[in-house]
Image (cartoon, rainbow, N blue to C red; front, side, top):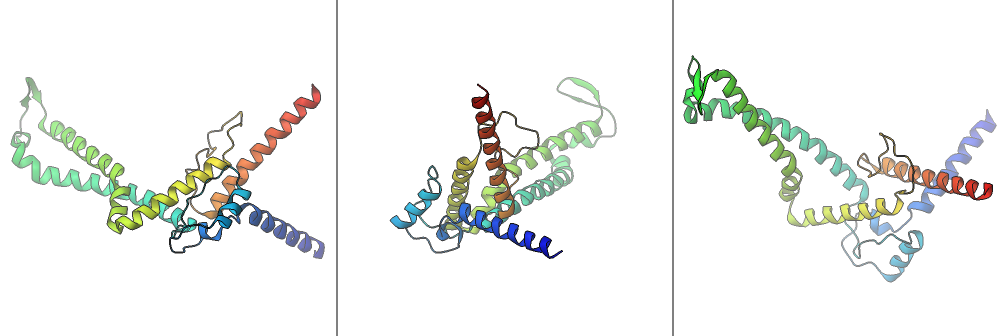
Amino acid sequence: MICLLKWNRGMMLLRRNLLQQHFSVSAAVFNPTPDTLLSDQQQAKIKSVCARYTPCRRQLSLSLSRYLHMKSRLKYGRVLAAFCTYIGSAVSFTVLVVPVCFPYLMEPGPITIMGFEDIDPVFAGTCLTLVVAVTSACAMLSTYPNLALTVKGKEFKKIYNDRGEDLQRRLNFYRCTDASEVTRHDDFYGDNIKDLTDYRYWIRIQQIKRENIEKLKSQESSES
């Protein structure tokens, strides 16, 4: 039992050291500090860890963990806003617009629309309502993130976008593009990253893929 506890403690220390080695880039990149220019020493430290990674020239006041949390909230809020827009537009269009602009849809018998006879007004009204509701929901899906960030202010929107660009540079650096197989559940673009744990796990998966490819290449070279 004591040996098992010591082994677990050793593995935890080894994992912490590996994480510190890969993610101790610059405290300014992760910590919410005021926007100031990075010094040459900080730039050199970042380049020594990530040779191809090109960070922002400014320290970002929005931490990576907070950015991922807000990105996840925007994603779920976008779906909720689209659903509410769908219900609200369908109800308001049926109650307010149809009686005023399309009174013939309120008739009890069949109607004629654009030369088509014997059309059920209930069916026509339902189709028209669905078109309006779906269009409104799609418009909300596409505009909600921009609207939500605009409400928070232009400065915060710029900080959020800068952190997003910085994250994309990180993902582009660590992404393994030499993998021969990409499974259905392979998060190649990092869309499922919701927090720092998912981010570190995604990077570790990319490292494992790269290690497997190098092992395979070394085996092929040794066989030849």
